[in-house]
Structure formats: C-alpha cells, structure tokens
Amino acid sequence: MDDAAAVIERYARFADDEARGRSDVYEDWARGIAQDPETAALLARIPATRRQPPLVFAVARMQGAPVGPWVGLRRWLREHGDRLVAEASALSLQTNEPLRCAPLVAALSLVPGPVALVELGASAGLCLYPDRYSYRFWGTRDVRLDPVEGSAAVVLASEMRGAGGGELTLPRVLTRVGVDLAPLDARDAADRAFLEALVWPGEDGRAERIAAALDVAAADPPRMIVGDAADPATLDDAIADARRAAPDASIVVTTPGLLPHVPRAGRERLRRALTERDVRWVSIHPAGMSGAPQASTGAAASGFHLTLDGQVVAECDPLGAWLEWRAS
Image (cartoon, rainbow, N blue to C red; front, side):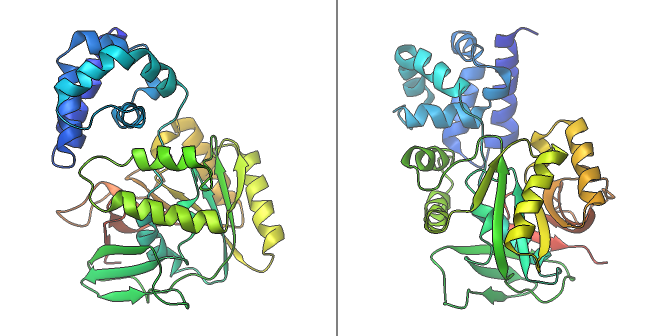
C-alpha cells in the first residue's frame, strides 16, 4: 500500500470508528479526504507518525481553516496545504484531558498518602493536579469532592458504575514531576492554543475545561523532564526528583493514556521497570497492555482499564467520563 492509499484507508476508518457520533465536522472532513485522492496525496507528505486525523485537523484549524463542511476545508487546503504539511510534520499528537483525573482519584484513594506524583507522557501536566480540581461522581454512588478551599475552577463530572472501591478522597500531593518527549508549557500562549485546538468540534465543555486546567498548571508549574518515558534511566531520574522533594511520600507513577503510544518493546520494558521499583503505579490504558487479565465486567465496557500496580480495579472511559468498578 502506498502512502496516499494508506491515508485514504486511515481517514475512512477514522470517520467510521472514531468521529461518528462524536464530531460531525471531523467525520465529514475525514470522509471527504478518504474520497479525494488529491488531498490524500497531499497529506501523504506528512510522516506516517504525524498524520493522525486529530493532529492534522487541529493544525488546520490553528492555521485558519474554516470549521464547516468538507468543501470549505478542501478549498482551504488548495491554498495552504504546504504550510499545513510543514507544521503537522513538526508536531506530535497530545491528549491532555483533565477529566482523566476522575478515575485517577478513584485509584489514588486506595493508596496511603501523602503522595508524590510522577506522570509519564505528561504533555502540559494537567493530570498532575488531581488535588486541585473538584469532582462530581454520580450513578451508583453520588460523591462530591472539593479541595479544602472550596469548589475549584475545574469541576470534573464522572459517572460511577458497579459496586466496589473504597471511600473516595482527594490525594494529598506533595510534589509533581512530569516526563514527556515534547512537554508543553501551560504558561506559553502557543502551547495553550495547540492543546485547545486538539479539542474536536462538537465536544461541548471540553475546551473550557482544558483552558481552566491550564490556568491551574500555569499558576504552579510542575517539574518537567524531557525524555523517553519508556527509558528506565529517565524513569529513575523522575523518581529521584520526586523522592528528593518529598522523601516521606508514597511515589505514585501514573500513565493515563500513555501506553497505546509506546511500542510493544517499550511497554514491556516500562512494565518491568515499574514492577522492580519501590513505587505505586496507576494507569488508564486499553485492556491487555499491563499484563493484567482482560475479562470485561459489563456490556458497556470500553476496552480501557483503570489499574493499580498492574491489577485491574475498574473499567473506564478512555477520557474519564465514567468508571465501572470490578466486583472483586
């Protein structure tokens, strides 16, 4: 399969499997590209690791592409395609969704505190502030959590399903360390604009939530390490930083959404390293990526697991909109 044919196949699959029901605009754009060999050939000039539809579409919107029917994007690409190719080729897809802190808080409630957080694949670090956000869990249990100061600017609502789990509490976080190949800075206007552009049209409330979380991170930036999260040496540097800053805290390494972006060999190397070190590990990832049993608990399973130290404690939505406790 040549590169243009790969673009057509990839964008058709995205329209059917990911954008449908989530973003009418992105479904229309992806379907249009899949039916337009000329545009597919243009996007084939972007490296395969950088031509994901959400990244390409975000860059197009940042550069002024009209958010509307496919015909408008097609017309815009005829004039600005070279600039789009150059910019998309230099960026990496980032998903920094603070709502993932809802399942993270559920797992952190099972860890004795205080804690020092180390997030691998941290982007701008928005998931390093679970103690600074407010939570409204609803469903099988209605739980309201707020910082001691009161309701926060970021309020995260998540449905709780199933029986299980202990008492939900906000963690006491003593220090925060992030690791990323290309970390973003919540204080930088361009980085903020990029993260906000990665929100899909039609995702009501998400852009506002990310903007408010960026303000939280900008007011108290985490320590950021530039490096490969799957490299044990980088992991050791991050753990050492956290331990120096908070010697009496439990070190908790989190990987919310990271593992699908790490090649299999890197995932296995990271899993071994986390098992061998004196840390707790909380993760959100597709089933099977931590070596834990893959059996689903309910008809609404997403295929994503919330795990603690490699053991599945709940099914969860990939972005944190719900979690379903495992009965055990």
